[in-house]
Amino acid sequence: MSARLGVLAFGDSITNGGGELQWGVALQSWALWAARGLGLPFTTYAVDGARAADVVGAQIPAFLARTAVPEARYDLGCLYIGVNDVRAPDFDARAFAEAHGRALDFLRERCERVLCVTLPEDLGRPRADVSAANAVVLAAGALVLDLRGFGARNLVMADHVHPTAFGQVWIAERALDVLAADGMEVRVRPSALIAPGERTRLRALQGDWTYVYRHLKESARAARAVRRAARAGAARSGTSRR
Image (spheres, rainbow, N blue to C red):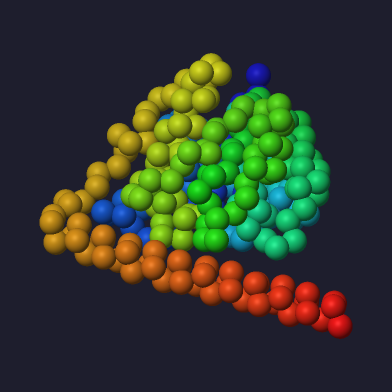
């Protein structure tokens, strides 16, 4: 029996990983942490800023062009996409559903299991409407990691979009719960693999103030964007009346 090649992942920056340390813990992809928890190799084609159409139009073609074993099968396929879709002014739920479905079909052809992920309901500033995208994910017929309630202060950055290093570990832990319930063997918990640095009072205050500053900066940026959109709408309305 030929061996399978572990975990194959598509997505955006959340699955690509990378960023600031958090108390000495590296910011790594939740899918990579899950692969480590399963004791499996990890392959990713996730790209920062990607949307569902990019998975179909760029990431899957990259896999087909670069893989050394085109006929190989994988133990698990991971798809977490949609954050950049729903935050875009031109979000099209029907187009998202079509691309998301094609990506899942591709993974189903090559993977023993497929895991997809819902979007946090408290996403971005201004807050994005994730309901249509989540309806697509929940109806996809794959294993689902439900992140609709994800959003604690130490798990999400001040932009209310990107997980922190601890947030990535948290997501991986919940992904492993879903996979274990479906019969996969979890060999080690990601939380057992990290060794956070000492959290002194001074370092805690520095971290809190940094978060507050970034949160206020992001909120102000979002408020300016809302005002600009309102002015643009009023201008268009005024033009249409003339």
